[in-house]
Amino acid sequence: QVQLAESGGGLVQPGDSLRLSCAASDDYTFSMSAMGWFRQVPGKEREFVAAISRRGGNIVYGDSVKGRFTISRDNDRNTLYLQMNNLNAEDTAVYYCATRWALVSTNASDYDYWGQGTHVTVSS
Image: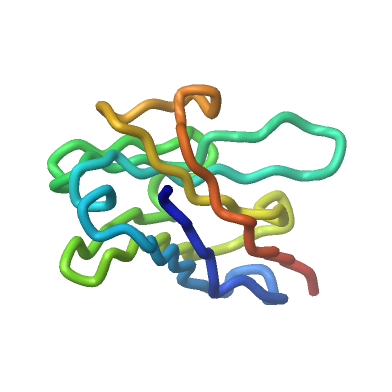
């Protein structure tokens, strides 16, 4: 079974940048799977942030992060990344990475495995 572990969250000020990482435990699964980032705040549904195909040729972003966030992956390191620039208070959330055995999707229910999440707080 795939295990995903997010890291890189923290407290930053508006306008700052952060890079999140998601390390996968299963080498074969990671390189053959689409990956996604989602975020969630208390009381709200999980929101799609970005997704990337298994070789990185297809990338999709949520409207609220387009132009500010960049998703990437390193299949040799079994690691997914999310570079977040120009952060604002609305980006405050728990960020989750997820994987699925198919094409990229913006729907959280399509993903098979999830990490535990990493907290991102943007505040002055």
